[in-house]
Length: 76
Image (cartoon, rainbow, N blue to C red):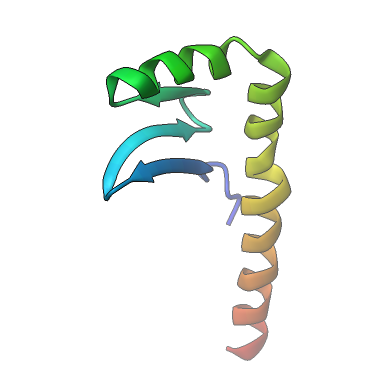
């Protein structure tokens, strides 16, 4: 219940092919296609953008997990 292992993922796909993905644990974008590798390098060089995405694990994931968790515990 400490939510320390929570991960925020952003996946970008086109035609059912995963092009790029951000993982808050890794802390950067990874490109899986030639074009996405170039884009990932640009995004990863923007430290303000990356820091914002890293913070989203607290803003979204942990915040909503606590709400859902307490709602479940209140019903049991």
